[in-house]
Image (cartoon, rainbow over all chains, first blue to last red; front, side, top):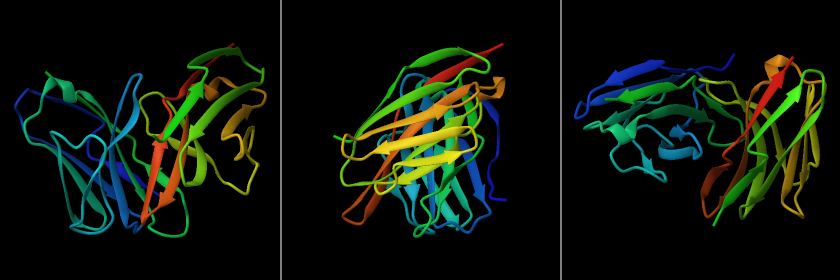
Length: 113
Length: 114
């Protein structure tokens, strides 16, 4: 059974704090993604990675960075959290070739106060 | 610009009734179209994926159709259940110039009431 897990379901942080969101997949997928989801806006791609130590900016990378030191783990970093980063964050993974299927984690609801 | 438009934005139906959700997309070059179900506070779960050569695909009580000529897709839910209450997201994938990207619709929020 495929699995994408995220380190926290709910997180509350203060403005200016450094925030780490962790994502782990057990499917040996090459591609991993971070999205944020806001009401009325749908899912928007923040960053993605197609291999270890590789990263590409998505549509809204400002204020975020990522790290992929191991194939199974993809971290999203908010260097200095701001209230406009309050959102639902979703991690996903997909095999680079073959199946089109993309699997999502359960999401992290981040609140920045 | 690649876009996915879904309608209606929200829908309320009685348990046991059927419903159809609509999706119009403009992505190029088109690769495949997928429907996801997202329960409140959870990550999306795939229902169907269709390439341009497929015009219908079923997953239990869910049936998706695809018209690649008109760039339209629909998701039909038969004999709705309370557990069908969720957001349904249409996603169009495009592939070209060495990249493969997804464009997400904003979703249709379905509420099934007893």
